[in-house]
Length: 234
Ligand SMILES: Nc1ncnc2c1ncn2[C@@H]1O[C@H](COP(=O)(O)OP(=O)(O)O)[C@@H](O)[C@H]1O
Ligand SMILES: [Mg+2]
Image (tube, rainbow, N blue to C red; front, side, top):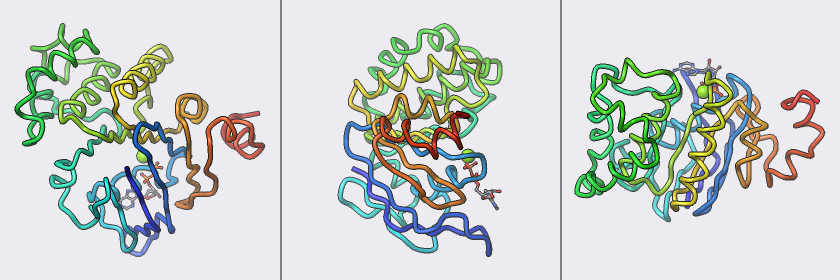
């Protein structure tokens, strides 16, 4: 579904991604794990065309998307839940959700999607008329995920959805991801919470200083000495 090949990305003269390649197949949950500053957000932004890689290719559903404007990439069925659950603070919950459907492929079915989303996140229905800035951190993260879903994505990129949330909400977010997968949405998940990410995903890539240093099935990575020492505190 998604094929990233040999991406090199710079900020000015500083190279942040080095020959990064990865694949996501339809129906998978794939994780990119790594510490703070490893280049995870830069990688997602490079895939989405928000940052322009110096070289490399990104192919989605058989078509090259690198070089396309971000809105054209979104039209192909790629959505992002940005870091920190960013939403529009001065708009209501409902308005934030409607903005998520503002793509030609999603607009017609926005009513039906809204109903589905309220079934998945009943709290958002309760908060429908509240301004987004009045939500708790967990609710805001739910809204950011829900807004991405309103665009009816085929592949959803999530940037550290559990970051800064209390443990019970972290569990809730990971439950939501399971249910997205059951609804046929493919997921590329970026996480610093390595244990949780490896528990939920099928496969993972380990990003260290902008290099993919390991990749494989999560069950195997959980057994790896390097992962256990560097990321699981064992
Ligand atoms: N807009 C930017 N301009 C310059 N440097 C940046 C910018 N964004 C990130 N960086 C730097 O790039 C590196 C990777 O950052 P980032 O992709 O945010 O990592 P992660 O998401 O894994 O924490 C860091 O050294 C960070 O300071
Ligand atoms: Mg980041």
